[in-house]
Length: 486
Image (cartoon, rainbow, N blue to C red; front, side, top):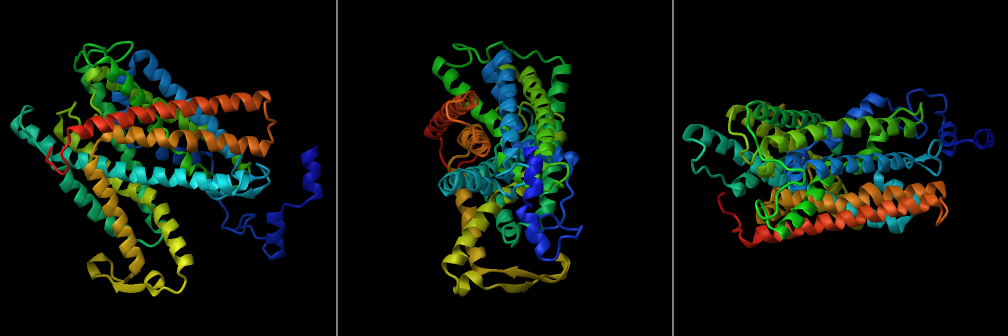
C-alpha cells in the first residue's frame, strides 16, 4: 500500500522528464529516452552462461585434483551459491534508490556511485581495471599456449608421444599481439558485437570437446589414481606444496565464476515489464545453475580421467594426444574465443583513458583528429577512421600486456591470481554493501551481521587464494628463462 501511495502521489522522475520532452506516448523508447529494451529471461540467462563459461573451465580438473572428491565439488557448489546470492543482491541495484522504479544505472560502476558514493566508486573502478588488465594478460598467455599446443599435437601425432616437440610461446604471443593491435583500432565497442557472439560459441565448443575427451578416456578403461582428499602428501607433493596448491585451486575456481563485472550491463538489456530485478534474479539462478552443472561435469570427469596427474590445462597439457585433430579443433576454438574476449575486456580500459585524455587536453589535435584511411576493395572498400592518439595508446597497451605475459607465462598461477584478486571486491563486497545501503539495513541487526560475516569469510578465501597463486608464480619464475622455447 505504501508503494502504491508513492506511485500515485509522485511520478517517476525519469518518466516525467521524457513526457515533458514530448516523448511520453512513444512506444519505441524506454523511460530513460533510450531505445526500448527487448531482453527476456531467456536472453539474459544465455548471456550469463556465455559470460561465465570461458577459459577458467580448462583448469577445473587440476583444481579438483588438488582438493579431492569431497572438498573439490563442495567448493565448486559453495562458489556457485555465493555467486548466485551476490548476483541477486546486485540485481536490486540496477535501479536506485528504489529497485523497481528508481533511476537506471547502466554499468557496475554507476551502481556503486549511486548507492555508495564517489569514494567507493573510485575503489570499485580501481578493482575493475586491475581485473581487466589481469584478464587481458591472462588471455595472452592462454592463447599463446593453445597456439603452441596445436603445433605440438601434430608433432606428437607424426613422431610419437615421446618426441621432443617444442613450441615458442614468445613467437605466438607476438602473433597474438599483432592481431590485437589491428582489432584495437576499431573506434567503438559496438562495432565488435560480432566478436562477442563468435567468442561465446567458441567457449562452449572447446569446453564441450574437453568434456567429451574426458568421457572417452574414462570409457576407454583408463584407471587414474583419485582420492577423497586430492593429491597425496609424500607421494604426489610435499606438505607445503599441498597447502599452496589448495589455496591456488580456490583462485582458479573463483576465476571460473567471475562475471559480476557485466551483470548490470546484461540487466540493462531487459524489458521493463516484468521488473528487471525479478527477471534478473531468475536468470542468475538459471545461468549459474547451468554453468555449475557444466563445471561439475568438466572438473569431476576431468579428475576421474587424469587423477592426481591432471594437467593445469587439459587441452594444452597433453592429457589427450588422440584424436589429435579434435585436440587441435579444441585449441583453435580457444584461440578464436580469446581473440574476441581480449577485445571485450580491454575496450573499457581504452575508453576510460581516451575519455580522460579528451577532457584533459580538449584542443590537442593529436588526441581529437580523425583521419579517414581508404580500405582496399578486398576488405569491402570504404574508409576506416584512424586517430593518432588511439593508434599509439592502444598499440602501446597491447605491447605492454604481451611483454608481461612473456615474462610470466604461467597459466594456472595467473588465472588463480586474477580470480583471487577480483572475487571478493567485485562479486561479494560491493554487491553486499550496495544492497545494505539501498535497503537501509541497520548496523548489528541479524541481516547486517551475517552479511558481513559472509563478506569477511570471502575476503579470507581471496587472500589465501592470492597467496597460493603468488607462491606458485615465485616458484615458477625461479627456474624460468624468459623468451625461451618450451
